[in-house]
Length: 164
Ligand code: RP5
Image (cartoon, rainbow, N blue to C red):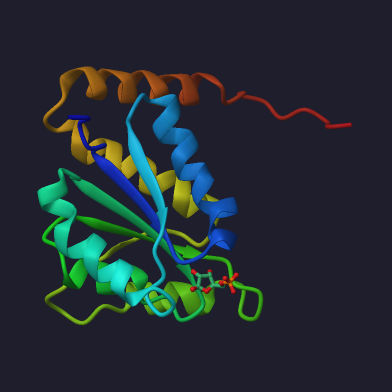
């Protein structure tokens, strides 16, 4: 039987993939398997219930959940699983993602969602945070993450140049 990926990336809509693919790119770069799915809290509530209530027994270890607007997907997911849920506020058209951010970050005490920045930065950092969590029990992954961070540091020039 195929082993379940350690990370689930879920998102409320196909339109969120443009943002969430940046999380997938980081996971690819660092060699972490993931399963990406569209799970809408309001358009596919049955799919959300099925996914969140079985995610742990399926073998997932961390969930990255991206949504925009009235972004209840990360919170509803967290309500139905003991797994860590990392929320990515997708930049919305009407309010530039401030609505998404506040919907995700303001969880009442008792059901946490680790909330990242709006948009691409949040998606990238959600993947890096998921990797940090998995690396606690995976030394080879911890080494790959260290190397990735060293490369990032080495890529920063000390002096600015005029760009064309
Ligand atoms: C949310 O509504 C999704 O997470 C998405 O960010 C937003 C807009 O969805 P679409 O109308 O583009 O499908 O559920």
